[in-house]
Length: 371
Ligand code: MUC
Ligand code: MG
Image 1: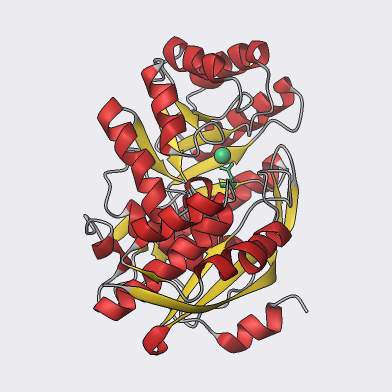
Image 2 (image 1 turned 180 degrees about the horizontal axis):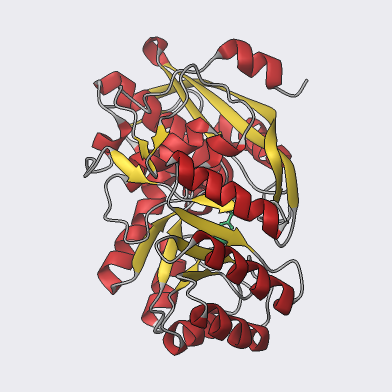
């Protein structure tokens, strides 16, 4: 069904995190959600969201740049135009705006929300149809303190909220990081899957030493150990170790996925709607991975509920061998939606209503939006 865009509004919404979240390149005390409201003909409204991590420390688009790209370049390009679907929208955006996949992801999300509402269908139905309504979700232990992480992990296991954890390492020396990861693995036990994310912090030599020790210690997955540009290094690591290597920063689009897989990468890809330019674009990478026999993982840019749900609609159409990390809303002290997501038993429930199935609390949006 064709949708005509009338106007676009974008807010930067700052929400504190429940505790400092320490990654190799930044410590987050707050997350900024770039929230998009797409007003369409016939009174239809679509909502979208884009987030990044630590200002400009994770990716090339800051929250402020996302808002500027939308308001200054994409809104004038798109408003007044009619699109038959997300393919036509992406065509138009890509013909006139290079890169800026985070901004495009918020717009593709808002478009899908509007189109789903117009058709009375959940976004997952526009993307191929959900295989499941409950998706696995791990939690990231990243307080920066081994004892605190162990307590947090034990509490979440006891509550039954999560059964799988990711650790953020790479900010400290190799020995300190390995001791940290293996202490958590030992404390949480054999039945609990522990993965690490190095966020590009090691060089290849350090990675060779580090991954060998993590593998011996029972760590299940090693994410982006070396810089994103070192494609050959990542391929070599994936072929050398039995513990799977997860490509995150190194694989944003279907083109990256093709280049890695066709040169012999054998690990896992982290899908993220922001890296690819939206849920539809992220699925293109997923389909390249499926064709190449590379396993899949539903990744987060620590989105709030809107961006998390947009991702879940896409991930629900896939068989994700490594589950998801769509816990973003749980890291935030508050959100701008009427009903929070249901996280339980290591899973989250996919909303069923038309569009994203998320209702925005406009009072909260007004309260948290940057003035
Ligand atoms: C990343 O690099 O994977 C995902 C979970 C988390 O704690 O940080 C992110 C980013
Ligand atoms: Mg990562």
